[in-house]
Length: 359
Image (tube, rainbow, N blue to C red; front, side, top):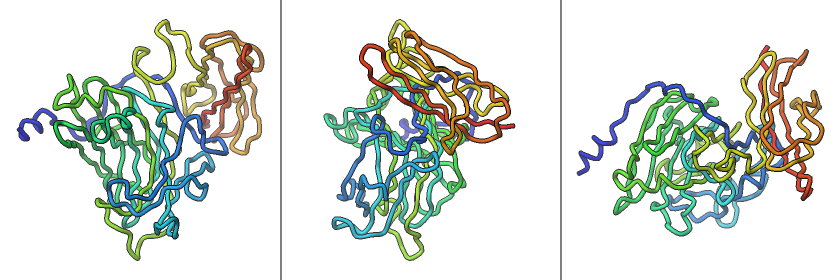
């Protein structure tokens, strides 16, 4: 049976993915001063997390914060509530969940014996179904000082099942780690190049867990069954850097926890990623309004100085797109910020996106 399972799940390694149109559905660019509590919540505790890990996950800014447009997760060697290490683990559980799509993050991982960063998803029904029946997709895991990253799926098929692969990677540099996930398969990519694929078509081999909503997790573990424990060569504190997390949908019928309704009218506020990005000398920016709103759309440099106002006034419900002509702005990263106040309720929505201008 095992032989046939691996034949069914046979993959091609190192094959570039075919071109496909992806629409940005949700992202966090980590440009705000604090963790966005509309996107993320914390896991806390130091019970080993099922892997005999050594860290205590906290909500402290010493372990989790935003800085210079990055999410920062810091592992520290310190005595804390009975554990000898602290770190951070954040998740979108009950806030943002997704079924299918392209899920990616640009990440720089730390290296060191006993260091275990991960970017993964879990089934939104974990509280009811438990693990592994909820399903888990490890988009990226890295251990110790290896020049390898791993992608793995975990599920229940009348008992625990797993399937995954790996690829060589100079992991200390920033890389884009992603999956492309649909009703037929889960594909793992490194910097846009596919290196592994799992078959989930028609719930083959009990893979129904991968046809339901999942939420996203980012964490930095210390020690555990897989990497082993830190030793005298491990440097603390050590840091996981996440430039952004983005979720794309390939068509408007794809399921996500927010976005457009069946008649293609915006059901929530949204700010799309500008296109093209990077750009020179101009780009276009789209935003969605589920109701008539007072809108301000402005561009700032990384020091928070306002450089351009693209919209400032009332706009009707619907999708809107505006051009951004850069004029004499210098090359670099800029931040586009949408602030929208609903006319009837007065509630305010705010979101940012990073723009890259290359002269």
